[in-house]
Length: 254
Image 1 (cartoon, rainbow, N blue to C red):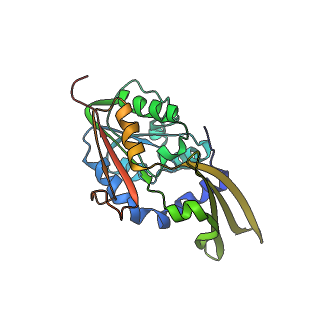
Image 2: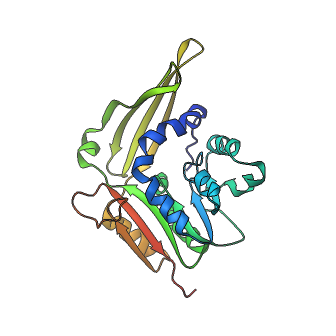
Image 3: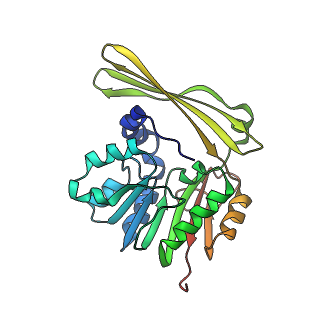
């Protein structure tokens, strides 16, 4: 299932998520990426929130994404002779003629896969592209039961300026389909341009997971071992955890 980022969501993505996400997950993923001495793949590379910094630090990193609009933004930020490193591909069926020493899928990539069949295909495809002894790292949020029941209605989660004197706002609503474990999220961007307020909307479903479901899913895959942490500092899962941080390891014997 493909949910293309609209043009202006891609245009403003860096500004939004530098404020909303960098302080949350950037250190965790960048530490994993920088410690890797071989090839790294970032799934859901987007506009390059991690990718560009890793590339500038000399990491042998590649990136895939399903959004053409996001990749267009990214390619404008990197040198032409490095653009071969990013490609329009899906985690379920991407292909490379070499394997990686680390694959990461930050910021809810796995939650864009609603069906268990494609979740398993994604895990097994990642497994095939890892060298023996290497890891796949991804995250998902732990569902807030109150939000699942009540939803969110017209909450402003970002308000600022994208250029001096030009305002940008993002408003989010959501509602849950409990039977199918989907959160239907509606985003609205509003920004000042050409002496008027412009607007763009984007609706996207996110598949939410619970702990034992995630464990059963990974155990059905080809990964030999895994560990689920409860936050980006690597603490154990407990009743106060807000995140699933999943590290899957491919065995040394193939």
